[in-house]
Image (cartoon, rainbow over all chains, first blue to last red; front, side):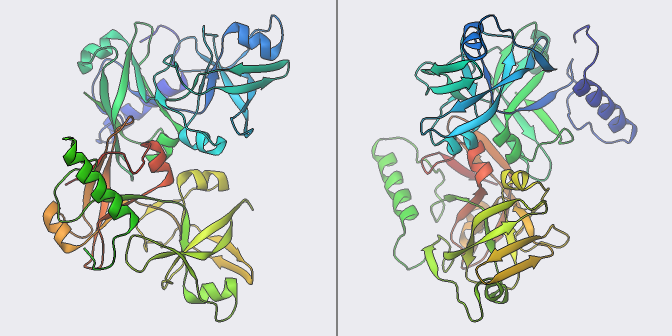
Length: 223
Length: 223
């Protein structure tokens, strides 16, 4: 685990585990791996290059962190854009996640794509060749993206020690079992291993709604 | 299977199975049960008593079938209502499914409930004690429902011959494995057995979106 102070998700997880032991029930997130399992729901968002940020917000503009995310150094920016879809339908306040990357990518849920009136493929982040494009509008201008609108495949970030514990490799797949009233197993969670990663699964809003996920819902990573 | 002419879903399923055998691939819906497996997505809708139909549409009003559903005798009516939620937020064109029942029930997806601004429990159809209510508005009046707004639990309708084949009983649970790009297993599909039922799984729009379900997506019922 990182040396930085615990964030809210980590503290909640530790409290939940302690309470669960205290009251003699299983932890809501089972398994005794080296790190607590955190599952977060990613709402629609975009990643932009610095060049694109300047097209949308003006020359020299730098993104301002608004809320730090669980992965080290990642943040939801103060800045958001308006997405204009292929039928001129619009999604306002599409959040930008920072820091800047070297490509532009919009991640939507299927419900968002339906409301915009187009089909988007399921892809891993960065794998955007041949995907649909869109127009983004910011206070300083328009950005035409020729491609890069995807539905992000459900995935898990983990450090090599987590991968060793679960017996999985970078770019392999594993399962995430979600308990609760609905009960649902994601059979293809894409594994991303990097020494900088904290153990965290990302599902999108549709996936979270389908399994009624809350931070109290029992869940388990399975090879 | 019923003696009535095959409907579109059955024809598609038969064609798909024949084609799959012809090209040497598995059927998209595997298993060799007595009846083809049909999975349908239920969009939000309501069931009403005849008394409630008359409150909303006028004395003596009878629902008019617009589209026959897969289950014998069930239909989407021409009539729809406006649902007014607890914060005065509204869903227009909420479809009524006929024929009338002896109670009023509204079935929404989690996304609908979020947009209306309230929490709804996961329940089996008919199990509405203690659930939230809402107001329905029709051309002839308002109907105040004190309870009956639910998120329907994913469920499967089947005849006794299907139950025997799958080794399940009425009111038990089984699993539905969905293939495709996403890959998702519903671990708690509630089983409803009745001699009048055709084999059909109902999932809601959120659940369908979460697994990217289309009529071409491979799926399988598992005990």
